[in-house]
Each structure stands twice: as structure tokens, then as C-alpha cells.
Image (cartoon, rainbow, N blue to C red; front, side, top):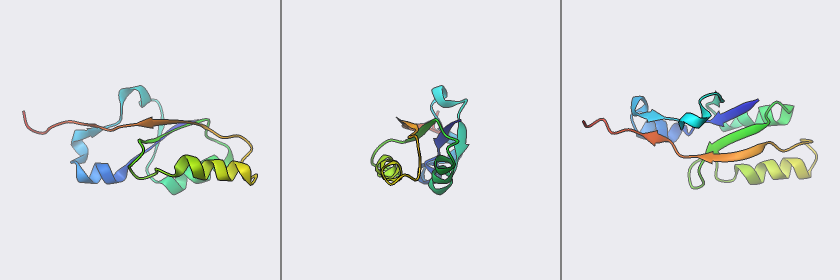
Length: 92
């Protein structure tokens, strides 16, 4: 399964109706919480995970996944990609 983890902080800071995920990830399942993403990785259901770009919540997520792999909690690491939210101006 391919998933995208929502940066809920950015959705709250910017009016959520003006905030969109990049179009290339429109077929990914949205996970609204990093903890839920970890559970799905642990069960082995995720093949690709798209997380907020470094510097936003989740900056240490790839390292955490690596540690899960190193200690044997997961057998296979998902492919990791990064995204930046599209924020549209409400001013026209």
C-alpha cells in the first residue's frame, strides 16, 4: 500500500481549504497521524510512504524506520519520499 502522512500542523496553520497534497500522490492513502503510520509499517502493509519534507513534523521518521529494521521489528523497509504541501492564497 502507498500512503502519505499528513502534516496536520501545516493544515492547521494555513486554512485547510487552501492546502493540498501534491497531485502526484492523489492515489495514496492519507494517514493523519505518524503513530498510525508506524503501526502500518510494523504490520508490513506499507510499500511506499510519503512524509513531510525535512524540518517539519516527522524529520526523524526515516531514522526511526531504520532502527525498527535494525532490531528486527520489520523485515522490509518501505520506500520513503518527501513532499511539500501546496498552499494556495485565499487572496485573488
